[in-house]
Figure 1: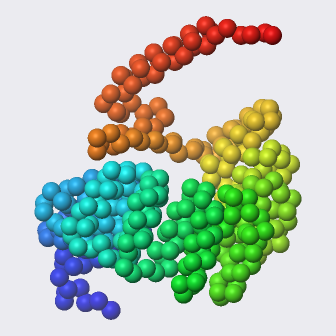
Figure 2: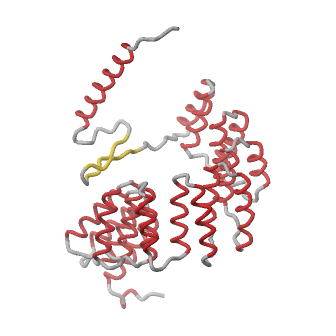
Length: 363
């Protein structure tokens, strides 16, 4: 039991800051952070990590900039959050700048940080630098190998994934749950059904019990290959048949292949398990729309209104000369929103005029 009177107040505040950040209560975390008299590197890392882990990467990057302005030197924890944010937002130039700072800070030998760095480069589609970081690492672990395997899998480089997986085992590293998930996902993108079944079955050889993500990956693999009935039977026979993600994966596959009957079954089951998931309502609505079932689309939209379910707006962003510009639907907060809108209208008019001027050869 902690005796509060025997501990420094600032120490307790920092611990509370870390706690609230991990719990996603960023409002409280920020209040505590602002009240800290002595903001140490630990407290800065905690608030930056809190925002990055909860999907507010731009805020985390802004806080990092302020931390640097007051002269604090980043450590491995700082760089891990930075690379995660840059990878998620696909900010390659900013990620490279952070890489340069990391080298100057003499922490480039840290295995955890390098794994995050590899992940960042691959998410930013810089496979060359990602591979280079891996090649130059003096020490590696299963996380490092998994970052590289997952990176190639994200880009559909299935042959490289399977080759790296074999090399990893040959060098004495035991794959973990995340490694197998990356391999199964790659098999799905490559349409390698037999290999997928093989790797899924071989998990037990390493004492790994498949979790819901592995089952969902197998459903996705079968669904992508058009084997919807096999995917449905697999879901029903799995020990995790009551997990929403397996049904969500099946619903996604049904949309791709236009299987309305199975889509309705998958959607019904999914929404029983996650009734407030707006994304799947939209998936089902779009599935019906592609087949022209407009009455069904209307019904689904009506249900969403009755349940007060709204899909979160999608965001897009672009980095220009080190500055990040963020856009979302019906958002006019950007300082040049009127100029952008006028340009879009002008370009649309030009495109329409060009289409009208096309000569159609009826022969």
